[in-house]
Length: 212
Image (cartoon, rainbow, N blue to C red):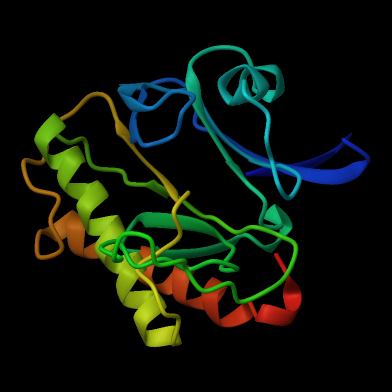
């Protein structure tokens, strides 16, 4: 993981880049490089509060390394990235919780704002050394989300996440593929524990007074 900074819109903003190298594929909800595909890198770029650009994919592409990869963005401070490992799996999380949301909120009911000015997003990257089928990869996204929600509940936040959360799971392209990625499978359980630990630490470190 490499942390660099740039000046954009009058603000000093951080960028995290993970150089995966050759032989990895990812599943992601990110706008840049989302879905299932081959990835050589993952980018998590901090953007200004109130981000309103209409070309987020082009923006991320302008910041990204060459080649295929996944680009996520957040207004949370990426230099507060938290990592946790379990049995060969590593999870990284940038946690911003100004506006936690309930997934099934009633229509028209506003989400509670816990801090002024800045928005927040929880972005999660997981690197797992076990190759997986497409179905198992989809299952890992469910597992990551469930573990994130458990961590927020235990940390006392009123929501299942934020409305702009993104996730990326990276696994090797070659080798015998795991067919399960749920929280009670061998690798799914390790993913769940790593994500839970990273998000919980990030959530407990984030406070409303931080504003980001």
